[in-house]
Amino acid sequence: MNKVCILDFGSQYTQLIARRVRELGVYAEIHPYNISLLHLKRESPQAIILSGGPQSVYEAAAPLISSEIFDLGIPVLGICYGLQLIAHLLGGRVTPAAKREYGLAHLQPLSRDGLLHNIQEGSTVWMSHGDRVSRIPPGFMITGMTPNTKAAVVEAAGRRIFGVQFHPEVAHTFEGKKILSNFLFRLCKLKPDWTMSGFIESKAAEIRRTVGRHKVIAGLSGGVDSLVACLIIHRAIGRRLLCVFVDNGLLRKGQYEELLAAFRRRYGLNVIAVDASRRFLAKLKGVVSPERKRKVIGRAFIEIFEEQAKKFKDVEFLAQGTIYPDVIESAPVKGPSATIKSHHNVGGLPPGLRFRLIEPLRELFKDEVRRLGLELGVEREFIEQHPFPGPGLAVRILGEVTAPRLAILREADEILLNEVRKAGLYSQLWQAFAVLLPVRSVGVMGDQRTYQQVVVLRLVQSLDGMTAQWFPAPADWLGRVASRIVNEVPGVNRVVYDITTKPPATIEWE
Image 1 (cartoon, rainbow, N blue to C red):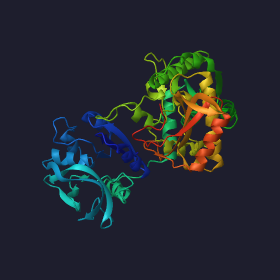
Image 2: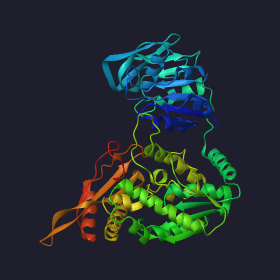
Image 3: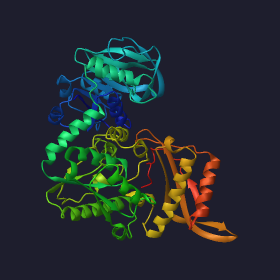
Image 4: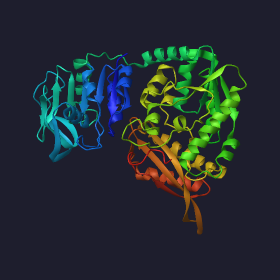
């Protein structure tokens, strides 16, 4: 299978590069810019992409790479900072631009033999840079320009090194996907061999080799990720997969009972049901930090898995539904970037974990997991359900998690989702959920003063969860939802609507 390695210099668009390459049928992985040359060689990529980044290549602390990368004989594409890095390391010159360029620009192709094959005159591209390549390196030629950027596209066809000053990965670059396609297929001669059916075959074979004759224990959370992970492992090793479905007391109203029946009857999984709701609530007593909540919940799950595993012989592996955004957001896979939040699958495991981990979805984005689920026979209705966090309602209750607060949130959440479905909005949204705040507000009910809880409604639209827009819900619909919650949920006297995008906020509040 072909592989593209993306070296990340801290761009907010790096994940989009990987997504676009995969959408074109080529497998792509993101690595920190400071990956060692030896490690990069071991990855055996057929192409390398250098991402954008917020710094200037001529700064003392600028993230750099070894120029030996350009001597490996592997095609390289530099995007924005990546282009400037190519120029800086190979004898060109990068200087501050007289006029910074942010937003839309119009590309004038000077040659259509390479990257710009079949690109239209004046095609719209997205610029985001304050520096420019003022002198291209020896052996390169300028093949595209914009009114403000002479070296908008540069190419050294003989060395198979290419660069663009704009961002072909973003939707604002009208023919960006075509430019990436030219790089992958016209210039690198790759094949579009990244498919879900191929992934199932290779991953199932990999799991069989790894597990051997042992057993695997896995946690079912009720979400798409954990179910799809279990189904692909089940395809590989059958009944030797032990699925533990824990009632942690943090699920939605009626969710546990409905899912338990579906896992056993519809999908034929070997499911062990464990009622641990009181145990989780006891461990969460007094815990208010979201990071601490995630770790407490993650460790409680592991304790339960270990207890269940002792009842069986040859359980050597723990499976998790970790997906690529979990890895990206939980750990500084980017050299210059910081952790956003610890994911329960990534950061909540104790150091002395006796299991070996299996994470069959670790390389996949959320939409890829959904496509994989459909390939594995999961019903579309389940696949298209909104993402639900592994720690459940614990990270939608700000402050301490208690039984009374869970009861309030469950009822508010039920009303919201009911109204979302009735209005035909569910399929338009990435997520719709309620959040319970750790504050009270003054209200008036029946001519009496109240001092009660505040519920936040959060409705967002997104393609992959990496970025999100708040949903402009109709005012009368919001009024109806708020009215129902205040009238039907004891203890709530105020409902507010979250209109923050991601970034700067995350989708979940914790």
